[in-house]
Image (tube, rainbow, N blue to C red):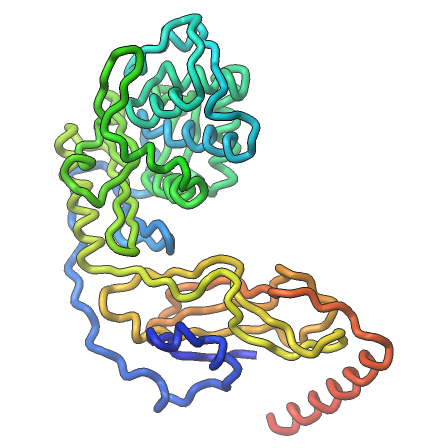
Length: 399
């Protein structure tokens, strides 16, 4: 069963009331507006870059985005993500005190300046990792969570695989150079999307400009936190091998973008090139929420159940990122599985939702059952079999 509907602004608010209609005739479709004129994407002085919408996941700009490059301290995004995940699971707490090993204390590069033998809270270590890129703090947390940096790196790679980071391999928790330590701009954008959407309660840390520990004040190296009030994260990185990199996120109105720039030649260059990407994205695109999670999109017939109709919808919020001023051209099509048969459990996939801009599919989501339907009694199932038989005959005759 295929059902089309317009997705104009007013239609989105009452979609459930119109989804049961048949395919709309061409004359009923919204009149296309003149398409937005979008200039070519900016070219950057960098090895690799990508611009992604944080909600819809749409990639707006990319260049060498799957190239495997040394990520330097961008690695710490995964280190922080794993800490946040453990906090969310309750296996560690922000107030837990962590013993600082000699290995953590001796780790070179950028430091939080923890001392060997000290006990430092998870909260302070997480701040030290995110804001001042503390290698010592990263090793201390790796040892606490996994018993050592090598097993922690193994966990990092398992999570990278789970998140779909196909061009990433971690050898340590810090980003210090390694022969087989690499990631890509796309993978870093994807990881940042999970950080923002999965653990928003910790995301505020990424926007903090300074951090003080042990009487030492250090600034966040993300210069855009001072220059652009819409920028609120995420992480910088630098080694001689990697050059200067920056993963940034900015939010304007209801739109949030994630940019990744890798392989620039200075701190100033990574800030300027990132600003070009963000300005381009916000100027020429917009993101709209089409459906809330759990919104009822249709109520198709179910055979053999204790009730005759099933409420179906999406199990996640649906966002679309489009050129500005083209949202009124959106249409949706429901592709429902034929002959839905009880029993059906909440969350069972029953079809797909396709979102079109003209003839182009710009988004696809799974349609799921929003309620349980149990088998009906013997006579109810028998009656449905008869009705289903004659319904099939009529359908074949009309076809």
